[in-house]
Structures are given as structure tokens and as C-alpha cells.
Length: 208
Image (cartoon, rainbow, N blue to C red):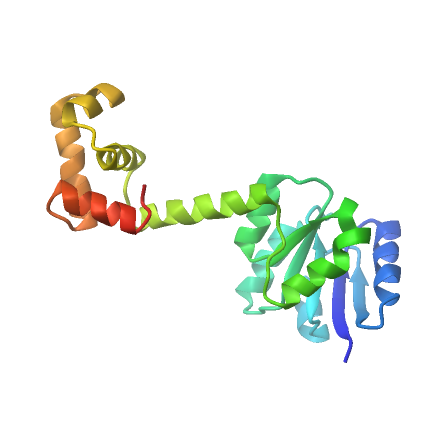
């Protein structure tokens, strides 16, 4: 059975071009092609495609907002975002909203089918820059799990390097007593009782 694809692209010529390209491959079928995502949730629910191709920059409502609502409704269909620029912030925001990956429009003719196949196999096509942002975000979430403040995270990192209280005080332009107070809070949040335990936990859970 052919893979059902739902397409959202506001540029009429590009939408028709993508649809025509997809129709050239008998493995795929375009089950719907729309110029906006105003009714994306109901359309996806009704059509039940195998994968959705969605432009990020759409009139009236962005692709990012649509992804958030689709995911909020419980629909887990893979959504591959299409974008003109490798705009890390917007693409990353789309991935955080629940997108499965993204493809630059300039690569549509050469990478569309490979990207679709990757997503359908459980992959997530993205550039190295975006992958790095995903990893960094995950690490920050790990830190936030313990509700460490930015300064506490900095001190924990310095502590893991083996720096003395005096050196940390100089590094962060605070008193030694302030460093001690921060470290006491860090111990409480990490539920440890010594520097060795704190550093061990920080390294094991990649908090630094």
C-alpha cells in the first residue's frame, strides 16, 4: 500500500511542485495539499496520513503552532517540517513542539524521499547545528530537574574541576562564605552530603 502524505505549503507553485514530485513515485500518494494549517488538527484526524509535510512559516498560523496543537490532541503522526532557511531557533522550536525532523526546501529535489523514509523508520533528519541544540537542551533539562540556579550550576561545574572555595570566590567575584552557601544549597538539591558525592552525581547524570 502506498504511503499517504499530507502537505501544508502556502506557496501555490511550490505546493504543486512538491505534489507532482511525490506523485512520480508509486510508493507515495498525496492525500491532501493545503495552503494553510488553520484546520490541521481536523484534516489530519480525518485523512489519517502516514506522514505530514509542513511548512514552518505559514499565514494566519505558523507550522510550529499547528504542531503543538496536533500533539496536544494526542495525534502521533510523523511531521516533517519544511523551511527555507536553516533558522536554528525556529527549527528547534518546531522540534520541541513535537516535529519529527526538518528538511531545507533547497534540498527538496534531492533529499525529500530519503528524509521521508528516515522519518517513517523512526529517524529524525536534522542538521548538526540543530542536533547540538537538542543535546544542550536535554542537558539543561537534566540540571533543571534539580532546580539548580544558573549560579549553582556554574559553581557545581567549577567544583567538578577541583577548584577550591577561594578560587571559586575569585572566579565569580563573591565571598568564600557565599560560595559555601551556594554549595550547601547544591548539596541539599542533589541530596548529597559531600563534594565527592556531588561531583560523582553531577558527572554520572551529566549535570556538568
